[in-house]
Length: 104
Image: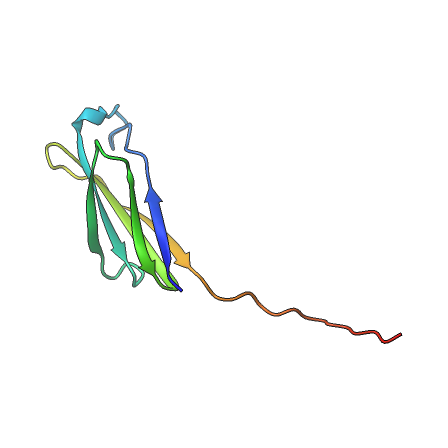
């Protein structure tokens, strides 16, 4: 069984130095994905600042993943990457235990 992960985020409101960030100065968020605990990231999409800040990643099987988001401004300067790990686990529930049958 596969799952779809939906990732949403908020654009920054401050710069790395703490100064206010004008949203009109932002270009996009580059979204990357790793299925091997961060050893290799594959770029999935570029979500422009004027678009809804969300992306869906379909057809994921059980495992550990990391999604990486990097914001880019109109001058093509990039912020620090934000890595968020998550786990897909579609395993079946365990079995019941301590079953007792009383005969009367």
